[in-house]
Amino acid sequence: MPDVRVIAGPFAFLGRFETALAPKTCAAFRKRMPFESRIVHVRWSGEGVWVPLGDLDFGVSYENNTCYPAPGQIILYPGGVSETEILLAYGNVNFASKAGQLSGNHFITLTEGLENLNTLGRKTLWEGAQNIRFEAV
Image 1 (cartoon, rainbow, N blue to C red):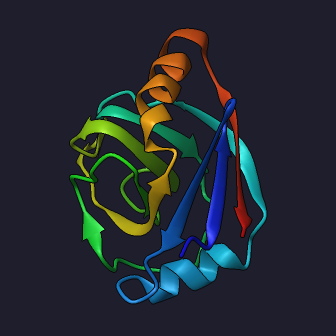
Image 2 (tube, helix red, strand yellow):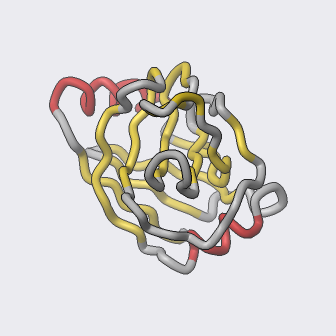
């Protein structure tokens, strides 16, 4: 059962919070919903889009962290070596920054609308930043 809607560019996706695996990250993010920002294409990580968040502190550390999110998985990098960020994988991702390999907390998995992920990624790559909104379902 979906509990989050992600509207990115012209596309809408439904997904679920990974509360059993990343309870602190899910709780911290839910407190900030609806969450709105802009996505840009990743620089070092492969086929993904990201929300740069500077020094925004969600008050979480690592849980359910990965360097290789699968398409449709959303991770939160809580900051440290690089700035805080949210990354949405639309293809192959090896999560990294100019400082090297990173890992982020996998806290949302998209379950509906996945057929539009690649188009969203390519649109962001070729047309630039897109709006993104996370809201409760």
